Length: 548
Image 1 (spheres, rainbow, N blue to C red):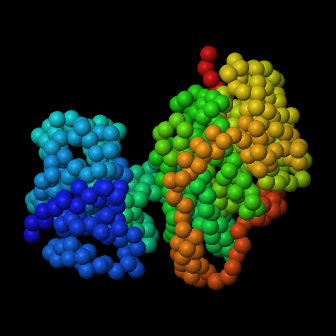
Image 2: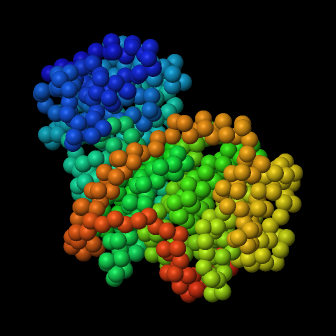
Image 3: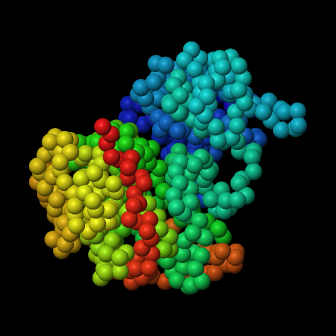
């Protein structure tokens, strides 16, 4: 069966609707080579026009998913598919979204081909051939012109430039990963590792029913409270925290799309942040300065204000947990890891803080030393103050081996020993310095709250508000109805413990985590876990300190 691609529908862009929009909404009139994706395949019934466009022959042997959102997905049926600007190509670049992408002029009339031929062992071999003037890259490696290059499942295809990743290839004839839960394999394709933490890796995943890319936080249960003997508390916490994360609706908080369980790991499916984290951004730029820091910080405070209004304390605010949604200098950012800290055993949690305690509030340091009396939501505001300081000048207010003080890191925090002496501070406004001082206040009762920060004169301007509205206007906030649907499934499904024994979660209403819920247990841990490493910790902080 020959599935030719009719591209007449791509010409209709007068209303701003691209072909990829039509494909995802089921309105495409394209041939069988490009099959509409349903966002809810289990419940959404195809229309008559969709049924007519779906091939009745052999199933697709592969799929292409867009890495660049200006491209569109395609199901692969034919043994040869052509790609390029030409209208006769099976996958044409001659569509409004790709034309607007900025690299369109570097694409050839026929840029590359993908062919599938029978293999000697009975299977098939998929080959890519570069037929362009400006080149094709697979996983960052340039494909020799006119020379076939084998294409493997989960390969990434770039056009003209190595960093211009546009398509992701998936071999549908391969078996699903047996190490992943079936429920995960049914909906997602697990891809490469994009980060790691104390409790497991963060990997990129692609939805099988759309064009969305996700970050999947994989939590090793053995390193968390899942390894405790109190199974009843463990499963209560699973349900409570899953519900907590799924109910947040704020443009500057990373939304949780799914929570999936297996005997050894918990998989939390999040929105993917393509711009990296704030830690990396500051390292790259050295310092962000007054103007850029103001719009970045406004977004952070707005998100934390939202959390505090819900009586939720983040407890682990640091640049690594602030994610950038693009590479633009002034971009949308989102806070992450706001719920995971409560799923993590507090002994392990505080052990991870030993390396980089620079963002801990004095109240938490006092608890470590056994002299504290608890903490409030204001610990987040202290952490925000440290983050603002770092954004403004590129180095932290508190660090080990500071040449201007004999105090160690924890002593600096307990005495709020910081200054504005570095030459970079001469380029920072007095208003910004005033806000830093209002947040790095030892007394939590006198320390600025998020609401007070938002009203501070440094952040209270019409120009800043316009920037904020522009950045957050396009931010996807998950539907409350969708979140509640997932919560219902979490409540009703069976969750396995470490031995693979299924325990049925009882249906009950569990409220969101309150600020006070973790105080007692955390205080016990802090009092007994003051390691000598804390006195000279902060190895990662050194990277922020500017060179000569």
